[in-house]
Image 1 (cartoon, rainbow, N blue to C red):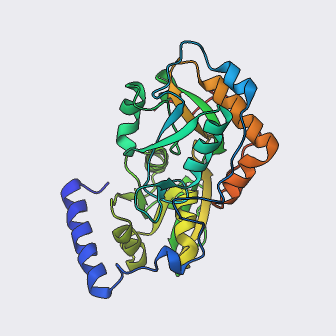
Image 2: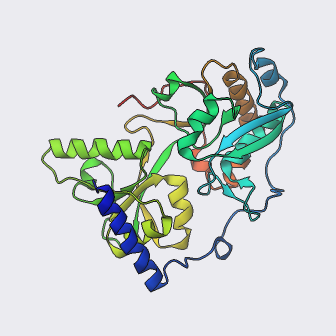
Image 3: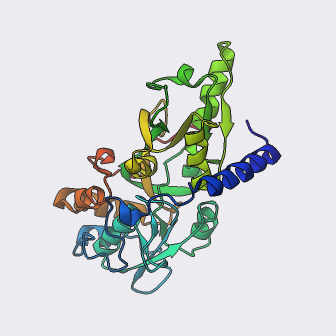
Length: 315
């Protein structure tokens, strides 16, 4: 694993190279086929009230604001969540799902942008009613939170378009490779387990790399300083529209078990079952499918929402 000083030095070097080569000026979203990024979101699916869901909200549940559903969401990367063209309105699949849940409960949606590392504290403190931000169900998280699932968790491994790596299907295929992964993520834990398994089998270690800047990350792939990028498939697939990277493998985010993404609420707060009912109503009436298709996530659709299903095992 790259040490912090070495990682920072590498990012600085790659960043300078990006400027020298002009690679920082990647094609803008407006130059690629893309979904609507307007703050108005006229194509966002909407719903009427779901009375069965409203009735399931426990009497003790206290909403953060009268008449509203306050939803914490990250706004880092499409298709899950980013800012609209006004640079302040969250758009993406997570806001679309949030809108359907709020509509189902007969409440006005209020989205609050939050950093990934800060959502647990914000939710526990009551700043948000729920969090919708590509959160995977895990057994460890279930000790503090309740979950209502809305998407399968799918990871993808991407390489530069001219890479000689044909496919990555199992842990041994990453032995000796330089692989980029996000810190403090489920995919990082999976990669670490793969590496441990490979070392136990006498295979070469994985050189694990971390980057905070996407321009530097993709320059590392293009320049050969990294061989592959393990990420949520939706995010990496969205970026791959420019034709500079390609998919060589896909895995469940709970490898080797299946895993699901879920609306997250405070443990025992009394709203999870209501949200699950709301989501199942949206699956049945077709709005859910529309919310996924808008962001090219239909391959990750679930057939039914569940409250607190089995999650990624503890470390």
